[in-house]
Every structure is written in structure tokens, then in C-alpha cells.
Length: 480
Image (tube, rainbow, N blue to C red):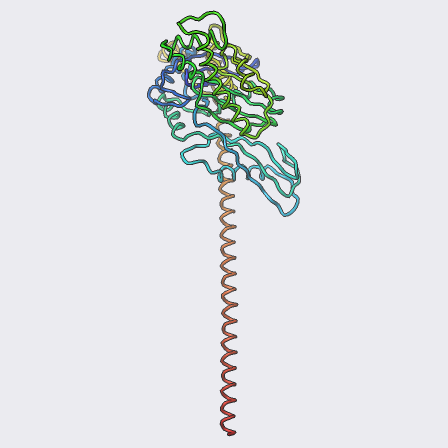
């Protein structure tokens, strides 16, 4: 492993926490290490409920990954966010011009900045991601308007938000585990990027992930995300209802998976098929009816629905889809095929999900640091020189670190440039506002001056007229 450019991805769900480490090669992403640990209630409906226990689980994942890697220590990771409270809100920003002008990058950047500044995030929520949907001008819809002349342009944005407290609990769990969050991405978006074809996203489709505690619905049209929402319903609702028949949760889970809906024959555990079918029909029907409602309420034209997640493994689910979603074409992909390349002996089955794989593909920064082996430390203490192979490895790592430093520096310069541009725009806006205030004050002074002059003229005229009347009266008196 000469190229020590490691991407670390960690996914938290209601059933387990999974982690993976990979490196980008000419053949694709190579999986070097994987780990997973079950969640025992401290993450519920995708939300961290117990920070300490979640932190301990993350630490356990990190330790298992480092044991497979051996010669590196993990410092940071890419993570996905999902679960209850995650949803989307649309917003619009428009620009009007007095004449036809060509749309430039500066105009587009300025509109994005305005959306960042003016979007009213609901109280108690935090915006985590913004997707540009489409631009509208001259009666047309465009996705890349640079260079197009217009007098007016409008852009639609999709803002992904999450309860701020839930996000803080997620971040605190990683902070306690001493793992920096390099970046976070919507799990639904990661799933869609891998599972939905370009044709499906263009023509209008929905991706429905039925998890243990939640069901996530994301809608696409014209190749753009149009809606994201999470229902507080999952396949565990079926399992819990089955436990009411006086069986354990494990037995209920087994019945749900092995017997499923409208299965004939085996009626083990003392529950007859009719009871199992009624429970599954009621609970899965509740989920599917809510899915249909959310799609209809979105106002988007959806022709096809793809089902994934653990709940989509339910036996004979297709029968329920035909019953509750008769007007949609549907597809079930509980475990989509991923083009994985893994080291010998690394377990990827049941660990690498589409979201976890998507995180690895999104990774751009090295998440690990090399550590010195015991033999190397002893050699250094004895004043020995590293072998040629080790020196080559050190040089390669130094080159990689230099490249990483250059990337970080470029990223920081870009951030500073954007901040400077934002500051400049704010100063210009402030100057314009001050100029408008100054002009208004000047106009007020002019109006007051004009009114005062008119008042003085009227007063002089009245005084003059009164004086003439008095003179006339005096002349009349004298003549008499």
C-alpha cells in the first residue's frame, strides 16, 4: 500500500453503525477495512439518543478499522446524515435587469449567496445541504444559463434541513470519539446517485428506503432532486406487532423475514398465517399509503418508484405494492450490486451499503496519518538508517502530504476569496443603502426648504396685502 491516501466513511443507522476505509485506485475504490456494530437503542429513528454510548460505538468501529490497517491512525471521517426531522424546503431567488445582459458566473454566485443569507431556516433547525434545481428565464428552463442573454432570471433551490439539536448530538458523538467530521452528506442523496439511472431521474421517480425505524422518500424529476422527507415508520413496526402474539422480538423478526406476506405452509411459533398476513398488510400498508400521499402532495410527476432498505426484503412485497400503489410502476432493490474491489479477507457483505460506498466515493481528503512501527522506532533510536524501501515509502508519503497541503491551501484560499467577495458585496450594499439614505435626507431638506420659501412668500404677500388695505382705509378716512 504505497499510496496512503485513505478515505474513511462512517454511517449511523437505527440498526447498526458501519465503517469502511478505502483508497482510490486506477481500477476504482479499493476497500481496505470494514467494521460494524449493532445499535442497542442509543440511536432511534436515525437520531443519536445517547451521546456517550454512540461515541463508544464509534470508537469501537475506529479501533477495528485501525487493526485491519495496522500502520495508520484514523483522524477524521466522512459521515452521512439521515433520520427523523430531515426534510427539504424549496426557495427562490430572482434577478431583474433593465436591459438584456448575459448571465455570468458572478450573477449565479450572487444569487446563491442571497439564498444562503435570506432563506428563513425554521426555528430550531439547521440547514445542511443546498441543491440548485433549475433556472427559469425567457419562458425556458435551463440548468446551465451561463452566457444566455435575459432581462430576468429566477433560480429554484432545495434546502435540506435537520433539527439543530439532533445535529449537535451527532457531532458531539464524533467529538468525544476524537474523530473530526471532514464532511457530511445526505444518505438519501448518496443512495440515489448509485441506485437511480439518469433516465429514471429525468422522467420522474421516487426512491423509498424502508429502514428499521424510518422510511425515507426522495423524489427526482428532470435529473434534479425535488423533495426529501422522512416518515417515522419502519419495518420494526411489523416486528413489534408480531411480538404482541407472545413471542420474542427475535422470533418475530424471523417470521417477518422468512414467512413474509401471504406465504403458505410453515406456521411455526404458534402464529397462523392469517394473523401474520393481517399484521403485515396493516403495517406495511400504512407505510405505502403514506408514501403515496407524500408523492401526490409533492406535485411532481412520478412514474416509477424504487424500493430499497431492509424493509424491502419482506417476502412477497410486490403483492403489497400492487395492492396499495396500483398506479405506479415499481422496482425492489434491497441490495443493489456495487462494483467493489476489496482486499483479501475483508468482509463487505452486509457492511458496505450504498450510502457507505457513496461516502467513500465522495471523499477527497486523506483521513489518516501514518504511524511508525516498533521496528522503525528501534532503528531510529539505534541511529540506524531506514532501508531503501522504507525511504521510498517515506518519500511517497511526503509527496502525498505535500499534495494534500497544497489542496488544503487551495481550499483555504478559495474560502477566503469567497469571504472577501461576500464582504465586498456587503460593503457595496451598505454604501448603496447609505447613499439612498443620504439622497432621501437631501430630498427632505429640499422639500422643507421649498415649503419654507413658500411659507415666507405667502406671509410676505399677506403682510403686504394687509398693509395696502390699511393704507386705503386711512386714505378714505382722511377724504371724509
